[in-house]
Length: 375
Image (cartoon, rainbow, N blue to C red; front, side):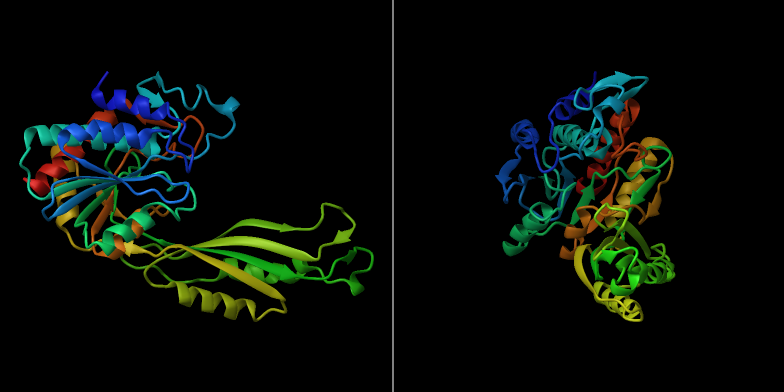
């Protein structure tokens, strides 16, 4: 087995369901210490964060990742236990193999080879890891960035190891991400007996036309870099569970993934203006998960294209699709940010896997990116 695979197997065995780290960061810190990486623990609340850095000169290149994973789901649906890494048919199965312990293992082995070959490389290299990416992400990278900003420590280039690939490894890189705005709406009515609707007020009936209007709203047309903004309802609840009671309240949650054509305030204003056109007694609690970002400077993107071309023979596609990532906290600092990682077809699913041959290829791509930028 390869060094990358050995390391990934060790990481997968650690049950680091968010916000747990399960010793992953300590193990990585110990492994990188002989290479001259200084370790700084920046923990907040129940979240473990680590900042590993080698060198003190600009430019600063940073690998960004998370050691936490999503819950495995029904264990009986897994062909092999999610935290017992299993080799089968040219793949490694286990929770976190693709999202994103596979990338972290590739970070480490790429760094080991690069520093062995280029001990006096230009600039500085850092690795930032958190255990709070798959959760609410309030005590992870956003807090670490705060610390770095206050002491004037600037990241120039940031590569996030999120699984960006589609049909084959490194066919897609993310050069930006849509924003994410979450909403929880409460619609009040009057509870009563279903046989006496005249003395009750059904919030489901009142909200239904407004919900249709929300779903059918055309928020924008997107632009050259982003698809149109979309709204999806994720939860809706009303009633006591009894079949003869009109509910007194309805709660629904929806999320908007928005492009750079919109901002948080505009979305809120348009939503309230739309809902105010209906006879509703409602309240909305908003939570901004992240603003959209887009890397337009080409240094990191071009270096990544060159590296992928040299290692694989083909050119990747630049894209801004998918969900959000911790890159949304790095981009506002002025850093160039992109995402490159394994194929994403099994992430957050049972029987998550990574292709064995992709591990070695990805590690070589990461190494070549360092060569393009720091030699």
